[in-house]
Length: 265
Ligand SMILES: NC(=O)c1ccc[n+]([C@@H]2O[C@H](COP(=O)([O-])OP(=O)(O)OC[C@H]3O[C@@H](n4cnc5c(N)ncnc54)[C@H](O)[C@@H]3O)[C@@H](O)[C@H]2O)c1
Picture 1 (tube, rainbow, N blue to C red):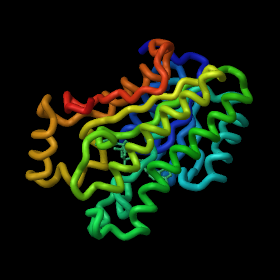
Picture 2: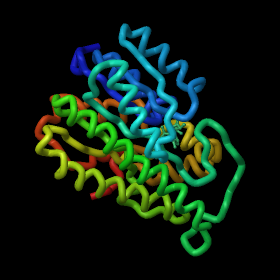
Picture 3: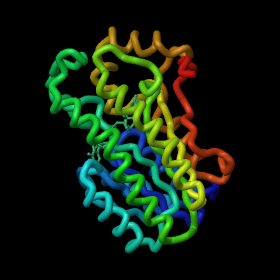
């Protein structure tokens, strides 16, 4: 590959699976050392091995991104291991309160806004919105202390702009990440830290596995997508690479939508 991230250190939350794992591999191919922050070390093993196979250093830091102290420990562990942190991709997320990445729990609580249990709503906000804020600020503080600037990429969703019936908690959490990104971009601009977000469409990862295994779900996702196909995690990693590299040096506070042409404007 190339060396667009040579000498850089990247933290990737949700890096054990799907979009986060694809970012870890792609960034390592471009020369970055990688810290994967996720709930389960065993699920991150393949990605850690892939990063090391490309000649880069990798660490796993067990992190629940919805817990403030975990995010602070993640930032400290990164600086201790590699001496700096230059890039963050905040990809940890859940589709709903019962979602466990890589497993179909079979749980199907009511999701419409009239009936969704408050605890479920709050769980989605805790991981998808507050968790992203907590990771962003812990890593941003480490970037400021190091004085090298940096680039933060928050993984939102096209659902930040497109309302989905029965997905109120998810859509609202992702719309919140969009605004979080804009406010933080303003607050960090004086530290030479750029903050952008990505709003993927339907991507082939464990998160869409249940929908993809149902022909009606697959048809619905393709019908909503002008390109008539789902995206690949690698296509989101390419967008993330653009946003953390110098190629996007004049871009901050933006949400890019790699989504096969869905109208999200
Ligand atoms: N797959 C899609 O179609 C799609 C579309 C739009 C946005 N997204 C977003 O992309 C991001 C990545 O999703 P994905 O599709 O790769 O799903 P995924 O389930 O494959 O990966 C999500 C990862 O986040 C981790 N995670 C969940 N909660 C966590 C927590 N509290 N602390 C630390 N790690 C946690 C999981 O363990 C998993 O490794 C999510 O924010 C998701 O909402 C996905």
